[in-house]
Length: 247
Image 1 (tube, rainbow, N blue to C red):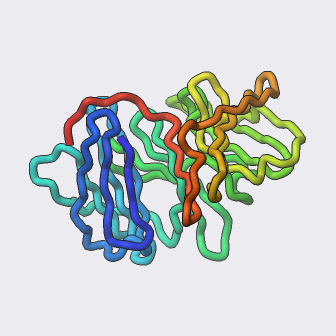
Image 2: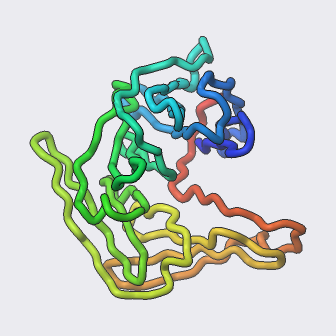
């Protein structure tokens, strides 16, 4: 499923590339989309998709829309965190949505939303993540975050019932990565990079970086080189899986 959320209009929709169906979601009472942030999460136990909408001003206002619910209405739930501004993109792993947030005049925090129980919580993270803006990734089924500022730095969380532990699995000094958009990781552990913007007559390339072998490969996306009148913004979805669920 691909979640489409407008930053300029009060519109949101879900698109299934497998069935080529789309579903427009009703407007929430959270107001205009440019003052709210929405996430798409998946419950693997009930095979349900849920959209979570956070109001960026009221802070304690949260709405949930369950895909496939006969009522087809947003439900308001309790949001117990204060003045934190949620940042995109999030990552959903095993029924939990993780996202980085920033407190006004303070550092970053790592928050999570359990799609099954519909409860929020704060995740302990290394200090280096609290001081900078990072990209969250699903690294071979585990939560990870990655930074590309003149170097490649990858941290992965080992989550068990007793405690949460983080380990730095890769660090490499290399310039140039900061120009690219990190578009998640493949199941084999390769990091996917794409250009954020596509100019007229410019071909779209996807780059796969393998941290273990420190190797880079490039793949051309066919049919993307044509004359355009406007600048194209690229929004990659590298972890899509086939789903025959009807909307």
